[in-house]
Length: 188
Image 1: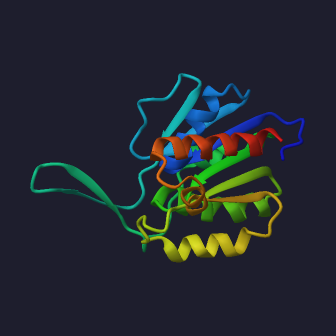
Image 2 (image 1 turned 120 degrees about the vertical axis):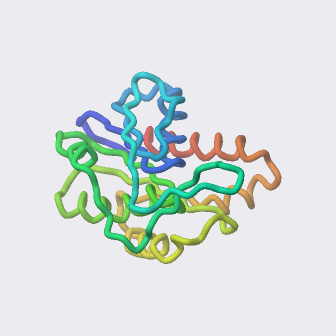
């Protein structure tokens, strides 16, 4: 899939993107690695840069004292300069975004058009959520999928097909297979 003499920069949007970045970095692919996620990941190798992205929203506390965050999906997306600046060097960007949560979905929506409009060298791998997952972003996910499904540099991995193919396999094994397939897409 990726035939370029430019240096590779793999960027994971959201939790699923970060998980794939961690797995691919362990597989030894020579590249620069960045994760953009919230909360900050403490399990990253030193070679992986982490940018904590805090979407608009509010923190709440449960009755048991546990803190959680509710993103405001109606508020305009504000992308920090540190994230915008990632796309300035002359590299081939491989974006891995989990579509389902706020960060992966909304950053992919923002950067998909922007990278195309600026004629950046990039490949986007979007991981579509299981049908049983949160669907607060369903309309945005469908919009991204419809807009880019025919685009040559966009690839979609549907987790439902993995569930159908592998059945009751433990979720960790299923995601190991997803990450192996993402790696294979990059290495073709």
